[in-house]
Image (cartoon, rainbow, N blue to C red; front, side, top):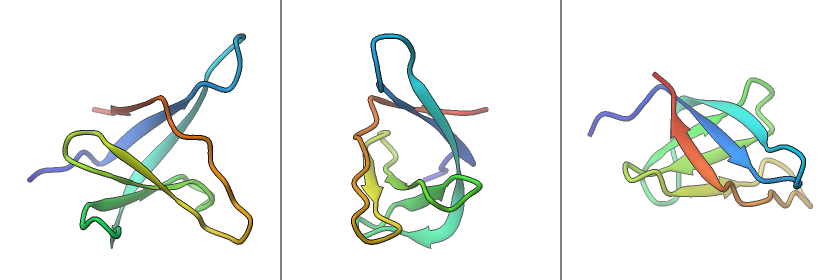
Amino acid sequence: MEYPESYELVFNESAVADDVVVVRRTERAGPGGCPVYEDDTGIVRAEISEHGDVRMLATGGHQAHAFPVTARARR
């Protein structure tokens, strides 16, 4: 399976605007065996399946991410 190099994670934060975070594929695999993607800071980390299913991964204690509304592959 060929996975995209990067995705845009779209969080529906408010009625005014969505929050979009670009994540790039790492060399790691998540608990489900799919690639782990992370943003440039390393704070936002997610496992994304070939179907675009997203599992947010905590990068520190007490971290609770909002679930992304959409994961869009970047070309």
